[in-house]
Amino acid sequence: MRARLKALRTEFDDLKHRAGRAETNLELEYYTLLEELRIELESAEQKFDILLEAHEDQWERIGEEVEQIWRAARELIRAITSP
Image (cartoon, rainbow, N blue to C red; front, top):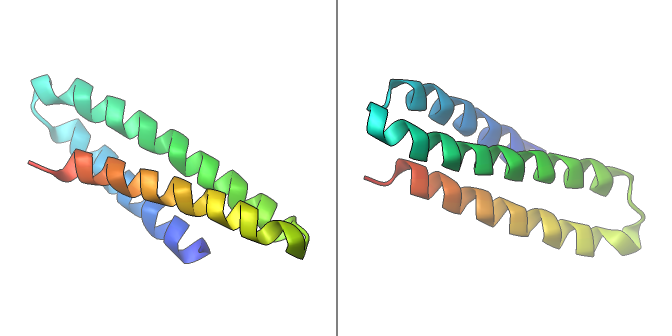
């Protein structure tokens, strides 16, 4: 899960870099989606930190929350990268 979060963070940084080079009329949309993605990433990272310290009986619930955040982040990346 940590590796997935790191890969997602790297992809976010790459998309942010590409957004700076996007055409002016697309920049606002790009940055809006990137801001949503940033919020999802921070949420996932916070949940992961909680998961590391959680008792076993909490792992499943928190793990499911992280997975939901992961799916939302992947959808945002698809929205950003689709033509």
